[in-house]
Length: 445
Ligand SMILES: *[C@@H]1O[C@H](CO)[C@@H](O)[C@H](O)[C@H]1NC(C)=O
Ligand SMILES: *[C@@H]1O[C@H](CO)[C@@H](O)[C@H](O)[C@H]1NC(C)=O
Ligand SMILES: *[C@@H]1O[C@H](CO)[C@@H](O)[C@H](O)[C@H]1NC(C)=O
Ligand SMILES: *[C@@H]1O[C@H](CO)[C@@H](O)[C@H](O)[C@H]1NC(C)=O
Ligand SMILES: *[C@@H]1O[C@H](CO)[C@@H](O)[C@H](O)[C@H]1NC(C)=O
Image 1 (tube, rainbow, N blue to C red):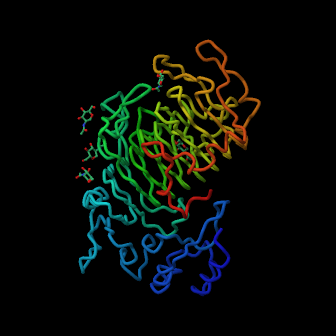
Image 2 (cartoon, helix red, strand yellow):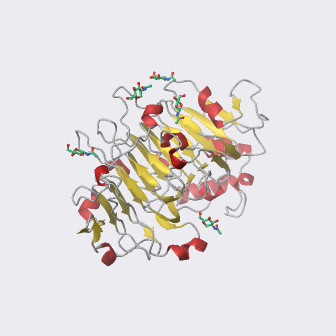
Image 3 (cartoon, rainbow, N blue to C red):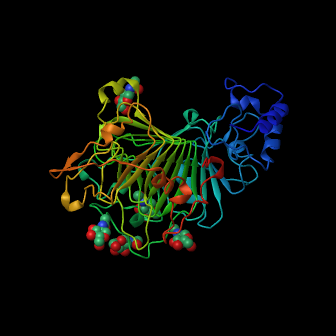
């Protein structure tokens, strides 16, 4: 919730009652935006993560379209515009306009300066690939930056690695952030592809706000079809959507990704990778049951690592009520892509689609170490609630290579504390904790 002081000063400023039903754009004149633009303190979002009333963030002045001023008038310095119609071009040379998002990405100089791309409302048919190391923020135009369901920008692109027609799943993604091709290759088997030691780290601070990314080649699981692929890079995804069926989210080696108030849809193994993902206040939408929600692979390092996927304060639910009835008790929380798999659901709501046992063993290919090794594999949960939470069911052994094993770990409070905030798990390549690249407006921990 926004602070009371903030709300009352804003009401005074606008002199109109604030209501969800008034289109946000009409509340702001150019003068209001000028004043808001100069604010140094931003509304904070409290621990509940909820808010009512005015929807304003540090980026709002740039993101919210208005008939009173040009799209770039309130964007930060070093911004470029994506406008497929090329209707909006700078008359004084203060910004450049590009027809596609990738053209804008490619035009940004390879420096350490922070750049911003404003993407005008619309649907873009592209695959995006960010190799730049310097900070980059991509903003989707929206009338309501704090409501993902009102996003106006959609990127549709990517394909599926159907019948292994590509040499690597890396080629399928709608959005890729990695310094080069080698860094993004998924490879095969339990350890995947290991890029050469001299492969650089990529983007240190990549952010996207209010954009949806869809890989739509097939509307079923028909081979890996990534919507997002982050490797050797730090990425923050705020109020975004990622939609596919198989392997929707891939966080590769030395990849860090923080998802805040996202919607992520998939069917089979739709959160996978080697890196670290933190998913907060989001919706994981199951479009059917296949594999598991998580299929992480761990990596040996010289230091004790915390690579894995952490889902916090989120909903794990059937994508819609039509399919929900046929999914009851069928979807697995995850399965071990290798025995160092680490995934933890913390304080999540689970609907009736989730199997009583929670996670499941895999063991399809013993040579690939797709097995649960008690004490090494962590397929965990803490304080799950809703019809899919089931402590008695989770305690039931399952058969793995003919042997009964309990695969789901119910974390104790002390165990959960090890992983209870993003600051405790995101690591740089040397194993040092790093979370300064996360937008502090959207860090409710
Ligand atoms: C961008 O700059 C980095 C750091 O200077 C360098 O390693 C990289 O090769 C450059 N990339 C391109 C495409 O020039
Ligand atoms: C991303 O762009 C780089 C630089 O042009 C290229 O080498 C790489 O193959 C691209 N990645 C993908 C997945 O297409
Ligand atoms: C990619 O990795 C392969 C295999 O290690 C290596 O031979 C090649 O030189 C690498 N390419 C680049 C651009 O680093
Ligand atoms: C429900 O989700 C399934 C799977 O994504 C989809 O095929 C179907 O069209 C959806 N139905 C509705 C009513 O949205
Ligand atoms: C990790 O190291 C152990 C011991 O050397 C080895 O047996 C195992 O296969 C390695 N696991 C992975 C996933 O690389």
